[in-house]
Length: 328
Image (cartoon, rainbow, N blue to C red; front, side, top):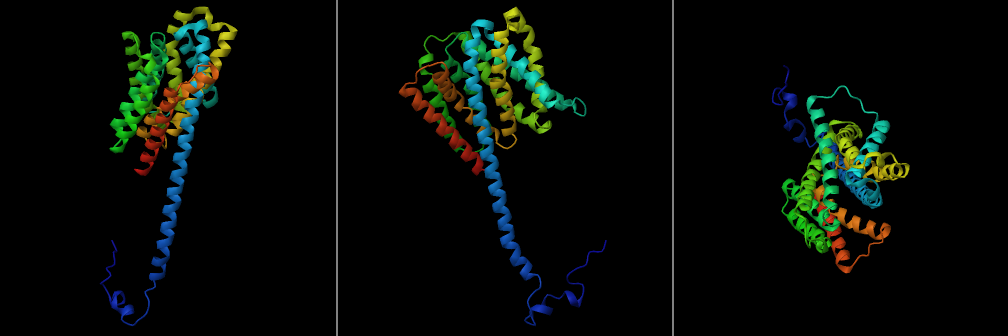
């Protein structure tokens, strides 16, 4: 161990240069390091801001794709039923992701596989329960009740008091959007929607964990396969031979791409940079996007209350993301 002490010899005497009026040779380097360090910090902040904006764009893209895919799914309901549509979505999505990602099966720990299985269960349960809910109660009410899951998650995971304000604003907007659907709620339908919301919150957490444990979208591909295997027996028992009808298969493939493959992939990538709390409140855009897709695809008119609700949830989402960004 050869640690030389600054006080060990005459050459190390700090007075040897300063007392003679000579400048310290280290001063120019120190002065030059200040602006350089500041420039590095600015570059890092700019890079972080761009990454967050990119993540926000990914989430919004996934939301739009999901809700327009749901509009197509409405057209498929009379052909295959709720469980049949879920099965088509998950099976086609799993096949596409497996071919595209070709995930490796070796080299993962028991914890990695537990994450994949849990993620798959959340995917299958979230979709199946939500379609069971909208089979019994109006869509607006079902979306509002389901959103309580991510909303609670946003409050629990965020460490800032301001998040409560954005969460309350989002809840108010979602409640306003679904206000006409709360008349005569079916208890079972409401229960299915609340359970779907709980699994939605679990999906957010497990998607983030899978993104950390698996490269690219490999975790999503494996989890989607688990979900497809779980839903297949229920779908076959419910829809039977309707699942292999060419028109049904074509619509099912479109629904799978728009409602599963694209949005889940975008969300998984976004969750690598976006805090779970901000992501959860951004999900308040789901009912707003659903109302817009319903208006454009299904010709469902929007009233002033619905427009006001959309404005509220958009404001809440923007505020949540800005708050999450300023905390880092």
